Length: 115
Image (cartoon, helix red, strand yellow):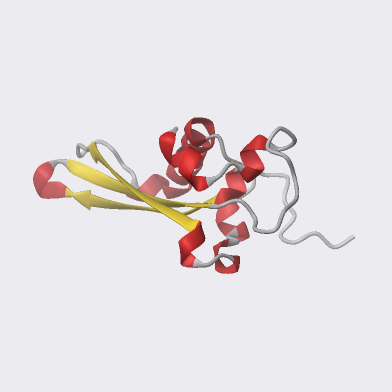
């Protein structure tokens, strides 16, 4: 059996970025401004930061983990703030599945944005 990058560790979803399969019109780009202080070491804990961001977006946006891609941040030192930037992919096109079967996998972007 050949499994890409098999590891018993937690999965790194950055390796499974499927955003290239989607047109830009099927991507929901989101930027959130938050408070920041010097003791918040985002730069040296980027893997954990990305995992926590993805987990929060999955819970609040009610989407699957693979649909949350391109997680970035930009620190605004002068204003003690940072900007969280990420993309939520739309559900796969031409999928004939009812929302009740796999709700988080096929939840429309407009509904994700409301959440």
